[in-house]
Amino acid sequence: MTSRATNRRTVLLASAAALTAGCGSDDGGDGGTTTSAPATPSPPGTIVPAPPSPPATGTTSTAPSGPASPTGQALAKTSDIPVGGGTVFDKEKVVVTQPTAGEFKAFSAVCTHQGCLVNKVADGTIDCPCHGSKYRITDAAVVAGPAPRPLPAEQITVSGDSITLT
Image 1: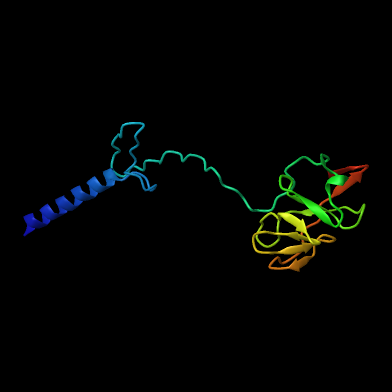
Image 2: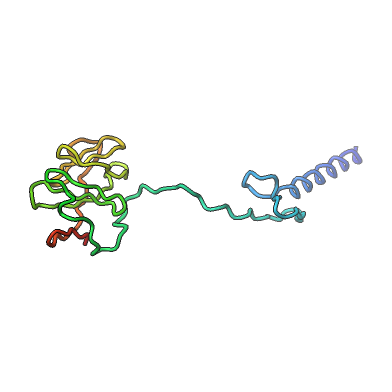
C-alpha cells in the first residue's frame, strides 16, 4: 500500500507542476502566449504579466465638467441667441438664453439628473433628451423632472454684440 500512495503523490505533484507552468495571465488568453513573439516557458509559480491593453476608443464621460474652451473667449454674438429662447454650446457645455430682449443668462448644459447634455431650448425651457428633464430659461429651475435641482449658473460677459464665457 505504501508504493501505491507514493505513486499517487508523485502523479498529483507532477500534475500540479504542469498546471502551474501552463498558467499565464488572468486576461482570458491562452496562457500568456502571443502571436507577436514565441512563447517562452516560465518556471513553475512565476507570474507572467499580461501585455498592455490598447487604449479604449469611442468612450465618453458623462460626468459634469467645466467649460472646454479657455475663459475669456467669445462664445457667440448676441444676435445668435433668440429672444425667448437660447442656444446650446456642446463643446463648452454651456447654454445661453435670452428670456427678454437684451437679457442674457448662461447655465451649465449638463443635466443634473444623470449628466446628459441638454440639446435644445424651446417653448421657454431648456430640454434634456435623456429622461425628459426641463428647465426654465429665466433661472434654470426644474420645470419637469426627474432632474433633482436647477442647472448651475455660468458666468458670461456681454460687451457690445459679443457674449464671452468668463
